[in-house]
Amino acid sequence: MSLPLTNSIWPLAIGLAAVGLGVSIDVYVKYLAQYNPLLFVIALRFLFGGVLAILVFLTPVRRDGVLQRRRLPSKQGIIFHSGRAVLQLATAFFFFYGVTQIPLAIATLLGFSAALMLPFIAWPMLGERPTALALAATALGFCGTAVATIGGTQTVNPNGNYLLGVVCCVVAAFVYAIILVLLRMRAGQEDAVTMSVFTSTVPGILLLPIVVVNDGQAVLQEMVSTGAIWHILLLSLIAYSVWFMMSVAYARAPAQQLAPLEYTALIWSALAGYFLFDESHSWHLWAGAVLVIAACLIVAGDRHFSTRRGR
Image 1 (spheres, one colour):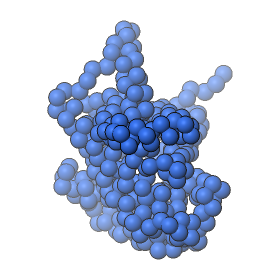
Image 2 (cartoon, rainbow, N blue to C red):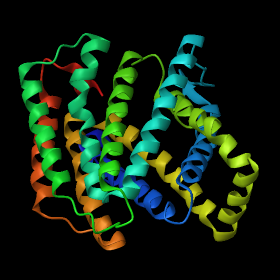
Image 3 (cartoon, rainbow, N blue to C red):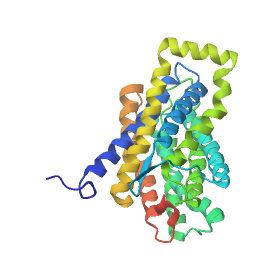
Image 4 (cartoon, one colour):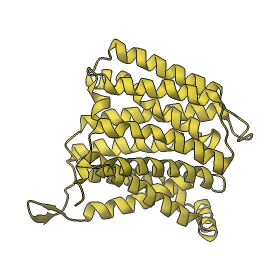
């Protein structure tokens, strides 16, 4: 007889697979952006993802033995999540642009710095004053990012702008940290399925003019002829699958067991970068990673700081 899912290694396995698939999104975007306009890739990814999110939202759920449809949030909630979705679009654009300019592993490591920025964002927004431990851990983490980025290789993309790519990834991490704090402000008021509708549809609507204008139609036709659009459809399916798998994993295992798995993304990114994009790294990356991950775990375990643990 099989063990219940909550008492087995399956949540860990699902979480680990979700992290690996999450890295595949970055790989896909980096590859597609080599041959297609980045804004088109992002726009179609959100449009396809929005359609999928709406279909899932419209699917009835069983509550108290009765099939019921999900309800939209209140007017205040719609405005809130629409604004959050705009920030989500900004995060996606900055991060994916950064991925096209710098190695995958360095972009992933810079993404971890969102956890280090949380105490300083939650302080004015939620009144959670950072402790001395959180401040010390943040300083340690930013030293790690400095070590990793200073030692980063620029030979992978000689036509790229390494410094601009690093800045974009840091900006993306900062905006993502704001999103996490905003999510905590609405915790328990909407479910993840409802929030995912706004996360995809609002950016997709905002970017829709790029796809439908005259030049956009020509680019879209070319993407259809080359098969790129089907890759983007697959990209959207992967993105939604990552969200679903993470939801399943976190519903069946304590967060403190699953959270460290997110840092395995650095290994996935380094392997994908090495085999697919000929990206190699010096000891600076791994030394910086040790400092950053240690700092993130310290901040996450700080008993006086609840936002990072809650998210």
